[in-house]
Length: 377
Image (cartoon, rainbow, N blue to C red):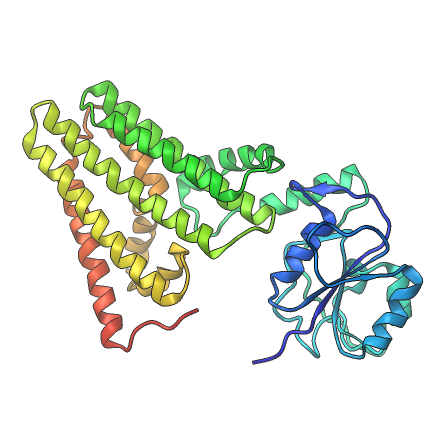
């Protein structure tokens, strides 16, 4: 495995602007640390609190210091906002400073000040563009542009039709207004789960109004579900714990909702439909538990890490399933069915679907056990 070169984040003068709720220097350090390599902050001003690996110096001290340290390093500046340092920035690739000379090149003027490029760049080095998008933040206009880029990157290719056109635009609108608050992404995960629990409690009433209100709150929770991840990505605060909390919260919300619908159906004199709701809830819990075990084997809490485990369906059927099996579509469908008074009568169908999902989860777990288990990603 290639050893990652340290990242030197340069913070020399310039305005101390905040982008997506955090100071530019803090963001640059977090993005650099996400490469899994040591990080050094080279600065001529007071560093953010709690930052280790600080080297104090001015613009004229940087090149001599790079030469004196002797080893290769990736050099970036805090005034440039970029989504991430690309994986290609290993030793011998990308922008590597060694003995004051460039051993690689990836649009250097996008990463470090132009005057420093002239002092470090070896004109004989071949060009290699591996940075991706970037914004140099120097004023309010460029700060807004950087935030636009950051939140646009929060959209996911795996978003379903409803999420892409309804849920995600609303959650991004909320995230942009909440990102500066001193609340952790896990706080928004807890709020989302609380809304879902409230929806489940309402659905236990069993009446038309209670069932519709519960379905609407579940859909609201589905919209809010994007906020925690968007804020975590915007502030570079993603974590394994956050991924697990999000996944477990989503799964338990669904389990509680189906059980609540069963209780509600039984309360209004539909015991058979109540049993169907109970079966749907328990089958969803079983499928979730198997999925959690598979995720643990892979060392991640990201539900989409299991996407490659399913056997691909034929093209047209796959496109249909990609819509029908997405939670965003499913919960919106529940609102429509509840509004029509059909959600309780549909419980046997949902129970059958949940049993099939549980069987599929067990089948793929057994298949991978026979195949030697899952490797950690």
